[in-house]
Image 1 (cartoon, rainbow, N blue to C red):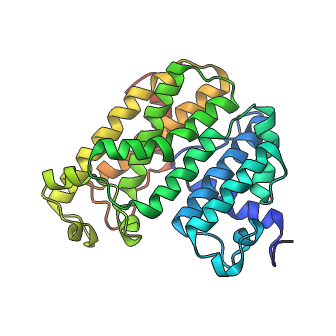
Image 2 (tube, one colour; image 1 turned 180 degrees about the horizontal axis):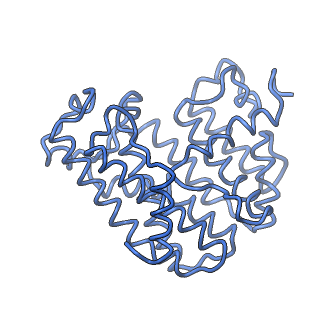
Length: 298
């Protein structure tokens, strides 16, 4: 037991969030062992983001599982430090948190290394210290930590990593991160974070106060359209990854690309007004995009 919540409760509270992601995490058509491994990786990635965003379950159960005293449970940097220490136990000991205990057999079976996991932790540390990005290149450097490790872990889990596939995967993951930032402009602003590059905001004459409006001005819409095109271009750059693999993995990777493309289309369908809430694609649109991606269409 961890407080009043069991280890399965802690796992389920995090893993259930997979259904709301823009991309399929561990779809039914994959073999059970591979689904389990992908869910173990997802559990880590989702929990570290929840720590960084201050979205942990009420009552500090995750903090207690990590051995963080109640007086420090609200300090995200302390929690991230404790989470990193527990991650290292995945590779050389016995982790405390149930999601990391779940990850340990996957890490051993798939010969995973700590580096991509440490990158995700570093990204969430950066979120506590850096709340604005001056240029697009600055944002890409952040995505190198916050998004690209996820794709690299998928390739590692499936035993398909090559330098070219990693390059394509990085483009897809960065695109998915940019799309998520566009969907969550209002939510991020509520956390005093802006992932729209300041240089681009100036170019389109957008002030931070414009992002706090209930609906987007013409300038904000133009800025969002510009960033959405960047994400679309990255998805197109990464899409050949799908054709480089075979079997069920091809379907999984097509789902990642299709999820990003469908989200971009949903943003466009909202006339690039993301301020009332995140535009989300429907299932039919996702299926259409998946089919187009499998056929190699842009």
